[in-house]
Image (cartoon, rainbow over all chains, first blue to last red):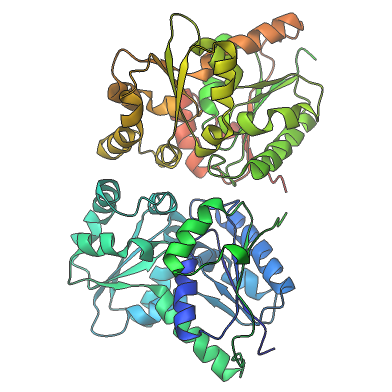
Length: 265
Length: 265
C-alpha cells in the first residue's frame, strides 16, 4: 500500500496548484491526477451534477488503486465530500477543512472568502468557520469569471484587474484580516488579488494546509512511500492541448509524456 | 408528421438566439429545445468530445419524434454535422451554411468571422466561404471569453467593451465589409460588437438565414404545422436556475413551466 499513488482530481487545471504544494511537502509520492477537462467548469453547475461528476472521478481513481484521494476542487469539496466518503474506505481529503484551520489561526476577526458560485451557495466555508469561532465575521463573494479568465491565460493586465476590482470592492470595504482563495484556480492570480486587496490582508491558499494535512495522514497510517518509484500520471477527459502549456509553466516540469486522454462515461 | 415538433439543441443558452428567429418566421411550429447546460461550453473542447456530446443530444431529440433537427451551436455545426446526418434520416440544419450564404450576398470583398476556438480551428467557415467565392478574403478570430461573459450576464459595460476591443482590434485593421457572429451567443452582445467595429461593417446573425432556410425545407417537404397545437418544451441537463432569467428576458416570454431537467448519460 505504501507504494500506491495519491489520487487527486479537479474539474480542470486548478488542481495543479494543489499538486504543486503536495510535491513540495511529499516529493517521493507518486501522484495520479485526473482533470475532468471535458466538463470543466464545475463552479457554475448544480449540486447534483457536481456530485455525479465527482463520484465518476472517484470511481476512476479507485480503479487506479490509490491509497487516498484529494478532492482538489472547492466546489466538489463543498458538495460531494460526504457522497464520496460513502463509496470508499480509503482516506478522502478535501481542500476546505485545512483552509478553515489556516484561516482561524492568529488574532482574526473578519474573514473573506472568494470562490465559485457553487461553493459560495453551499455555505460550507461560512458554516465551518463559524463552528470553529462564532465571534468572527465571514463575508463570501462568488467570482465566476476568474476560472474562464485563468483557463484562457488572462492572468495579468487590465481585464483581469478590472474583473478583480469589480468582485473585490465589497470585501475591501469590510476591512477583512484574511482572504481565503476558495477555488484552486485562484492562487494562479494571487498577485492580482493581493494588489487589489492591499498588504494588510493575508491571502490563504488552501493547498498549503492541505499538503501538511496529507503528510500527517500518511504518517499516522504509516503510508509514506519508501522512495520515488515511478513517474506521476495525468489523466484528462478531453484533449490535452491547452492543458499542457499552462500545466508545464505552473509546475515548472515536463509532463507531456505523462498525460493520457480517457472517457468517464 | 406535420404536427411533430422541431428539435433544436445547443450547449447552453446561446441557441435561444436561434429559437427567437425561428419563432418570428414560424410562429405555429412547436419547438423542443435541448440545452446541454451540464457540459457547456463546447467551444473550448476537442472535436471528438464535441461530436460525442452532439450525438447524445441528437439521440435525445430523436426520441422526442422531431421532424427535423437544428444544430443551434456553431461548434457542433462545425465538427458534428456529418456525424449527426449519419445517424438519422430526418433533415438536419446547421447554422453555418445559411450564414455563409448571407455573408456572400452583395459586393463583398473582405469578411471577418468571430467564433469559439473550436469553430475557428475547424476552418469550416473559411473553407465554405472560399468555395462560394474564391476572390474574397476571410479573417477569423477566436473570442473564447465572450461565452462565459454572456452566461454571467456581463453583456454591457467596461469589462465586455475591453474584451471586445482586445479581440476585435486585428479585424478592425483589416477593413472588413461584413462580420459573421459565428457563435449563437454573440447576437446577445451585438451592440457592443457593432459599436467597436463601426457602422460600415455589416453584422451577420446566422440565425436569421437559418430560420428562412428552415421555412423553405418545411415548405418543400410539406411539413408545415397546421396550427400551433401545443406549448414548446425546454430540456436542460443541469438545473434551470440561471437559465430561466436570461432565457425569459431574451425571448420575452414565460417559459419556467416548460422546462424539464434531464440526464443524457
